[in-house]
Image (cartoon, rainbow, N blue to C red; front, side):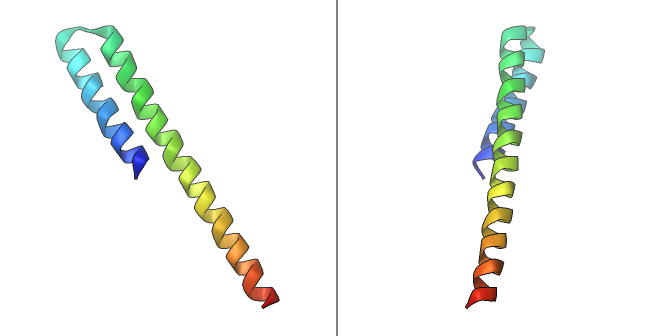
Length: 61
């Protein structure tokens, strides 16, 4: 969920930067959005690893 917040914040900053012509703010928004996507990807990998570990534990119990 933390990734979603960053992605939304990033989109808002990009839009504000585009509207005002502030290229720095727009670039900052792009970085925030990218950071959100990375956080989501890391969370997904963590979930898959936990699922795999749970399956292995079930086989040995």
